[in-house]
Length: 269
Image (cartoon, rainbow, N blue to C red; front, top):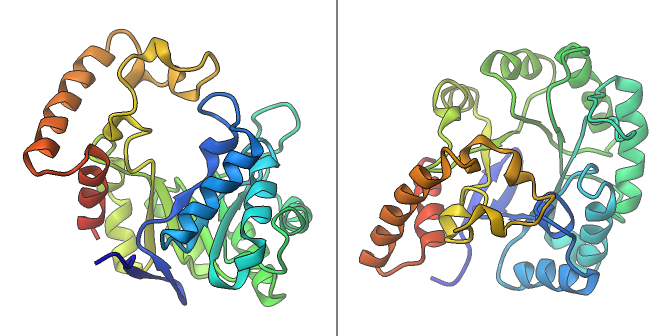
């Protein structure tokens, strides 16, 4: 019972719960001390996790470097996902031009201390670059052995189909939890139809369904969550009331809120 269960992703077997490493380095307040970050990632591996998620924009760059260092000694025992698609030039511009992809993949490989990336996601769809061009560039990298699987993050069902026609998409990553149900509109059905693995990010609702946020004002000043409507002064009291009902359900079943939230996501397939 203590062994982490496996699920299929492309040609890979990965643990059904992966470790998202973003918040160690960015977006939810100041970065953790490096040694604490390394210890956290290694502890996940010791507890059976073999699927780790990062991106060049986390930090930027520092999270990939942290993941690379933490997992270097067990590289052949884990699968690493990272992402491309931002300009990272002081703006929040998107850049998925094929020439940009070819450049940044080399940089990610160096930071991750590896000769291949198991899963390479387009971090956000770039409206200025046809998705067919993006898929074509990734296809070339797969042929070169630098990338093993192609993924998309937050695409529409239509975009998934267009990309999949050029290079099979192995994974689609989008926020999904009891609190965030958008993929149920069309994306989950499209993934099931095409045989694409759906990877839920923020499955514990950005910490909320892990009983990790009670007061928005307690979040760090630059915490990304402060910018989200669900956390604003008008919406948060209503959401917190729902969270309290959810927490009561967890207590009734003798599990933690995080366990109940993850169990629900896993039950969706």
